[in-house]
Length: 242
Image 1 (spheres, one colour):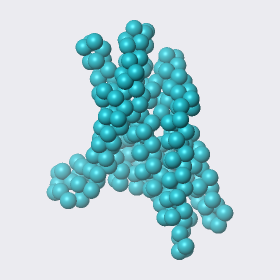
Image 2 (spheres, helix red, strand yellow; image 1 turned 90 degrees about the vertical axis):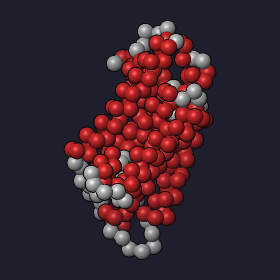
Image 3 (cartoon, helix red, strand yellow; image 1 turned 180 degrees about the horizontal axis):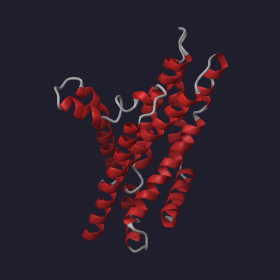
């Protein structure tokens, strides 16, 4: 665990020592603010709960995109710069490296989400929002971001460079995202299967409305762990190939 946290701390520092981390953070907050003002807060009267649900809907998309950008460099950059060789001669295991890099991206995404708290806080000026609703909404965008990071980290592990990792990670995430649309046009049993596998809609909507189901928590955690373990196996296979 200590080595995992050591890797996480090193990678988290890398986000702050390069321009990319600041650009991702600034872009996410800027776009999130624009969408909040344009679609969540409108000129027509709305219930505070509806404004908050709309905020989480748009914030979920930002969380997915930010997750791809945060994760695409984690392993691909090491391969691109040739520093992955240093890992093969270090006492750190593949799992410690993967989970450490994953935690660094999750910690950075948590900073972005914390900085966005001022937006739903504005609702309290003219309305009233349940703190439970606020907590469940932020929980789901954190879970969505973590799943997107895990998926894109796997893409970064199998890709030769950051560009390919970004494109591959985006394709994986978009595939999981549009499955709920596919579920609407197919017949059972595929309708239920695609609906369950979709990363948005079925599992996201209850959270955005202030309702937390254990099955949805299990889904997001399962997707995250599955792709993290796929990354571990891919890195192990690369080490054996030399």
